Amino acid sequence: MNKGNAVFNLSSAVRISGGLNTEILKQTLENVVMSHEALRTTFKNINGSPVQVINENIDVEINEIDLTYMKKENEEEIEQLLKQEARYIFDLEKGPLFRFCLFLLNGNEYIFSMTTHHIISDGWSNTIIVEELLENYSQLAKGQAIEAKSLPIRFADYAIWERNRFSGERLDKLMGYWKKQLENPTTLELPTDKVRPKNRTYEGGFESVVIPEKLMPELRRLSNDMGVTLFMLILAAFQTLLHRYSGQNDIFTGTVVANRNKAEIENTVGPFINTLVLRTNFEEDPDFSSLLLKVKKTTLEAYEHQELPFDKMLEEMKLERDLSRAPLFQVMFILHNNKKAELELDGLKITEIDVTSDMAPFDLRLQLTETEKGIKGGFDYNISLFEPATVKSISMHLIKLLKSIVQKPNEKVSRLEYITETEKKQILEDFNNTNADFPDNKVIYQYLEEQATKDSSNTAVIFQNKKLTYGELNYRANCLARLLKDNGVVQESIVAIMMERSFEMIIAIMAIQKAGGAYLPIDPHFPSERIDYILKDSQTKILLTHKEFGDCEIPENIKR
Image: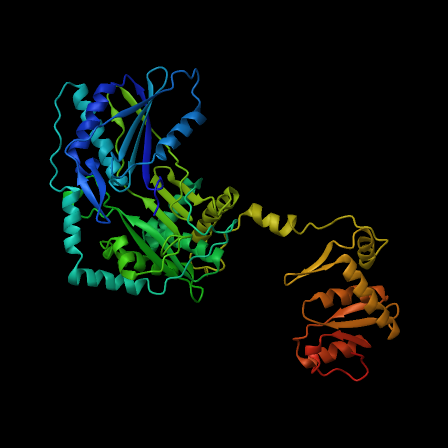
């Protein structure tokens, strides 16, 4: 469905300072590839179905890019080159489904990037690859021999075990839970800046999110008090924000789990990761503490049933596919807790580099990682739907909402503040600063007459896909004004208007002013007693209304 698309690539990069031995680096990569069958796997289409093919040997190349011509490092150019690597298009049939690249800089400086296709790997797997790469490099640099590791479980073994396991009673139990949990799914309708394309696109942007270090103790305190994890707390806050944005009470959010709950597969490379759907209901405007406990229950139950592969669930649910959006959920939240490789080697300094591919697998995806200085990460978002400024606002709103939550955890979700102080000032003060110089020697119908004289064909009023030009509006207002004068309207006469929004309402307002009177608007859906009181109290003598309101009881002395 998505040929020639890099949205399922995983990419990372490090800067290496020191005397890097590129021959040893190549040997270590070859050894890692030989140790893990997933890295030697390609996929063929046999009778309409994809079948994995495990190759005995596969060429391991390091693509070297010489950047020594740059007298001074050009960060923008390096960033663009890393982005190109992250967007590399793999051929699933030919392989290999990994790509290693080494950028040669000046003065014993290097950048090493690794890109893999998600079909053979996941975030945990890439950490395994880096750890083994560092271990092997260290041994070879010391003159020690290394051998390909023998793993107790290969990914192919796991795939067969999984297929056999998810059938019969086990499949029925898991499927029964998810079908009940996700029945009658709703589509999240976030307000977007652009019209959604008919076919899903994946071009994206990125907006960073940093939860301040000083906010972390309060979040941890609330988590401990409520007996929840930070993931559950931030998820509940994020879903609250989605609820407030959309006005919808049924919020579906995707997340992922490492799915490595067996010791035998902890060190095996492969796509073990699974997707879960977490559904939260906001009916009856719960307080946040109650909502958080509801999110906790949903999340724990989802973890208990996490083994069912997401694609199997979609297959069994037989959902009607919408090519414009992802099935079941359009927004994802991930709090990464994968183990991190210790980037240390004798004689080399290694530091991680952030790589962005500018690809967006969903409308909006929030990925965060807990660090010593707090939680950081960001939103990747679909640029066919959102402008950068909008996603920046979402980022700020999330932080503001988290601050409101730790201050008032028992507040109703509808009353939790997420608007920033800057936005509040803009809404309450700047937008309401409507002072403007306006000539006081004319009234509005005189400007209408001027415009009708200048260009009578310009559009003056639009209503229900119909238009009225300045010339037409002025002519019809003049006709009605003459009729009003003939019926006794003079300066300071009050004429009532009881109409729905319409061309006639605008014509009536202009005509009354042209005749020298003042108009009194009356909602035709007011109770009859209210309408009667207004007409008598105002002492109006004339009422302009539509025929459909002819049954209304009007005082006898009023012309209709």
